Image 1 (tube, rainbow, N blue to C red):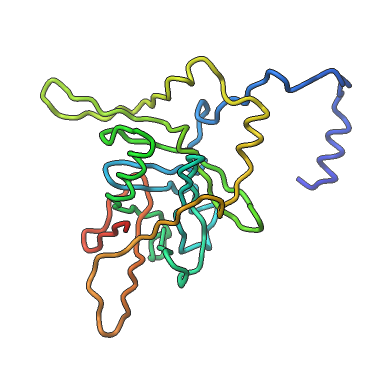
Image 2 (image 1 turned 30 degrees about the vertical axis):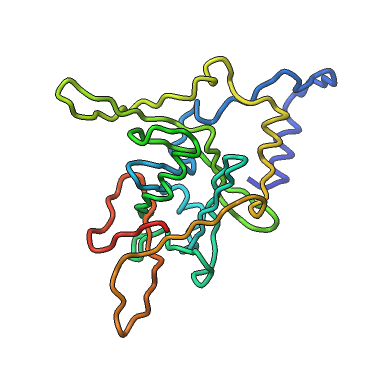
Length: 233
């Protein structure tokens, strides 16, 4: 729909003027409370991290990214970059059908879970947004607002993963952040307090091909190629 068509349709809608309305006291309902199958997400599960296909679809031309973490604000960012940039890694498959890939990252996984005080037996999923900051596109994820999929021990002693997420305790008595706090959280500076993590591929270099040391995966359901294991260093 063009901008002119939008304006014409809006002009046909009866609008009540009310200058007394205020956002004071309102809370922005958390996106986690709605269906979000097509929203960008980042998952941490059993020493692996992954984004979903929605991330790849939003930036289909991107092949290499960097992972950034701000320990102070508890924010995670996935930033597109060039292959030759330090700490870059491939986040998608190389075949005809592009898809996300997984990253095995015991050290990074452990540092994030220690930072957040999370249970490593559970799966944590973060919803994110594609934003433009200082002229750059990047995905941002809030570590403080995860969906938690618990694993509990059955009577036979085996772990069973829940398909229904649970949320942090302090979410029970609120719909979301206040309008003011929500607006402040939209402001992101990717170079202010962030640490950059790289991915290193464990495979032998050949004489005809240089060591790429940058293969990775990021997908919620696919398993990594058994011939190639990617680890975070």
